[in-house]
Image 1 (cartoon, helix red, strand yellow):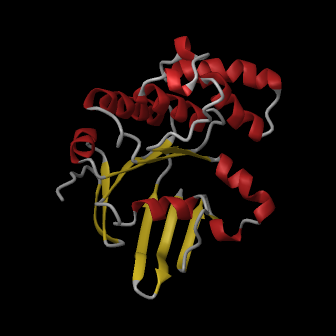
Image 2: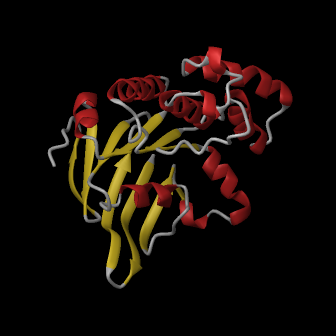
Length: 226
């Protein structure tokens, strides 16, 4: 379970990115985190992977206080959380397979595991025939699929998707959301941060709305009405 306990993040005296946020995310949930730019969505995700520290309050992952994890153990925490971004963050000089393999290499996986798992996860995201393609040879939707495969390959408990469809056309957007649904159906918690109303309203799952750093609604089968 993920638990934000009365969390605030203040960057300076005039800018509070989050204010007194208390939220629970259950295992295997699919949650859309919505709000306009600057609402606090990305900050919330950064606190979970400890790219940021809370100014007040506590963030927990399965009972472990995230801020208490020692720097030398931080990689173990982050290995449990796959991240997907709107700008893909692929390595341009590596093929699709090599980009995914790099995540496993960084996690210290054996060559035998890498050789077995990389083709499987690329098949899962529909790119079995593009394994040897480099990022410049892939469409925007295909690049995002590689990024999702990379996030998935170490079998995380949670996928954080931060505006993953922002640079995609409607067809690719639908395909990426279908893929996230599929991943969630396999038992992975998915937290999708987005300001795309059509995407959220088509998902028909839990919706948490942020506005100026505060939770303004939290509905089990919500809509994005802003």
